[in-house]
Length: 83
Image (tube, rainbow, N blue to C red):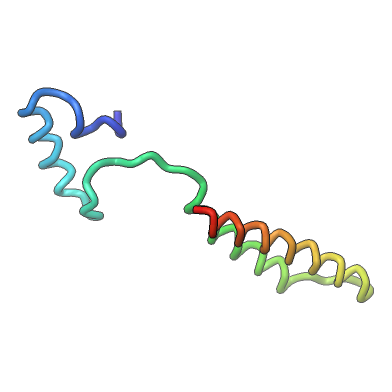
């Protein structure tokens, strides 16, 4: 329904739907399909938080945990560039 709203129907139905869409606060009009790309910044923030809270009893454990987080951050950065 949402993806077809304002795109299909009689000319009168489309005009009425466009009036409704014009009243939306974003002003962009039609509803668009979504994907997970909008979640990449949230994942990055969570990883940075994890990085700040790494606590290990010895330096090698801490270094290993930080390396793992850095690898995940690099992967998310690649995904961001890909979209």
